[in-house]
Length: 185
Image 1: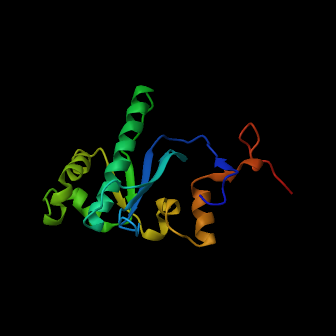
Image 2: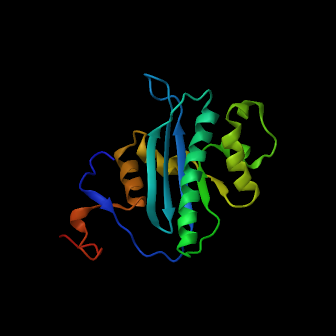
């Protein structure tokens, strides 16, 4: 994030180890090659543990395809985090992905294959299988609350600060070696 080179993540104890993801995609925003960008952030409890903003490898034919590619990427990362937590014997509940595109949420839950989704069928089945087995929940989130947007979209200073605070990105000079915020007057 611009202007945050002296910042770091503040990790705090959490009462639970639930896995929550925020994912989004910017369809065909690169004017040179029209490739989309996938962005996501994943929390375990209250702590940000994984995030990414990366250009997709191929051009998507539709915004739905670009959005679904983002879901597949974040689900793969969540699966890895779940596997690590299982190996460490840390219990967690069903992961939740917050997404601002209602169409993607409906396609993930609907077992009928839509004609507009045939060209990305493999990723669709990967996600849909998890949803049907109740190993993943999708929750619609209005765009103005999508934390993943801070990774790629231009935001007002107010929204940038709000999202930065929710991600627990803080100025390193305010953190002592013990992780306690020092009060600077």
